[in-house]
Length: 538
Image 1 (cartoon, helix red, strand yellow):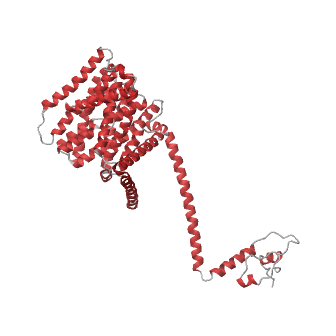
Image 2 (cartoon, rainbow, N blue to C red):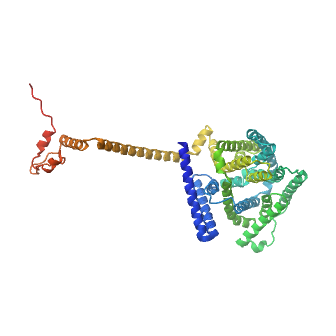
Image 3 (cartoon, rainbow, N blue to C red):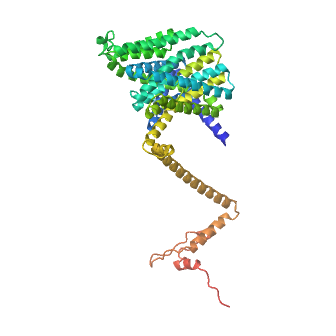
């Protein structure tokens, strides 16, 4: 049965894929290459919007819908979008603009106060991630180099997903957001030596002096900006008075600064998004901050949708289906471990329970820079193909389930604080509306199923009766006799005088029906035929 269902699903998927490919090819043939590309973009945007709306109606973060839309449209789905360089570039631009936006909204004083805690938490995450990677490497029979890369991958969290979730909750500018931003920035700084180490594991010798120099430069740049803006008033940007009332120039100028800083950071051997973050700190502490933020926010939202779509494109469905239990177990283990570890580390470093819970949950996934580390390890030959695909699959799934996990645990925490007896009870009450909706749907499905079964049973009964009658040699005579008997045993209503005789509607034979005397059948005669004759005594 399972093989039949699987075959049917594959057949339907193949038909849909062929239909979509045919539509795209026809559009490309009629409108050239740009016609097909525009149709693919239109399909991608429409499906992303519908998926985001569907998850919003389900009271889940829309970004989960965007990731699933990318999965459905990707190479292992319908094949509408390929993992091209253009998509990857737009996704990277989305991450840069997000870090630029976070830098603009960063409170210098709050960030400095949480910096010590951020470094301790990031260090603890790295140590425990290495232990978990060693356990996975033992199961997977991985090499020491693969174990090191897996540890780096697990240790990182997603700045994009964490900030998006906290922003949707309104906690980005409060204690959970400040703590999470500090930890994530510490991780972004750590990406620099991680990337250099991973790229050097393929056989070349590691230049530890170069690694140390780049880390020191990254730390000094951040420390210098924090020190300067903590002791000086708002910075007056060049041409501020000329462009502050022009929305177009504000947007172009801000993006130019963001991408220029990212490019310089990349050329210096640092992370490009780190340069975008530093540029955001500069603009956020200038006189243009209040004008730039509302201009950049819509651009950031559009580019982030592309980023989440690109995550879905990276998921290899064939590999996941072939190793479904391994992938799901690894993803669950990583998300659960990181949740517990983050909350524990934040609590012992001074955060209150609510801050530790929200900030810890927001960082429970594996980060987008893990894709970069995995790709660098695979390119250098230090990471095998199977381990690489496993790392990509687990990272993508953790990003996919993280918003749902965050939403669920946040609801449970709120209701548990209201005095509910257990987390099971809190979970049931937190999702009361969703459970009621599912129950109503199940009742409707059961009712339709029972009605369909009853109709099918009646249809089969009629067919069986018709087949039995057709196989009987005297089927016609039997039917006529049965009909006559039923007519005889029926008790018709009395006929008033003057209404005329009652005609028999079921003759016993065709000849009788043709030669019948209309006046021969009286009501009394009909009744008498339906009664049994009395038995004479003796």
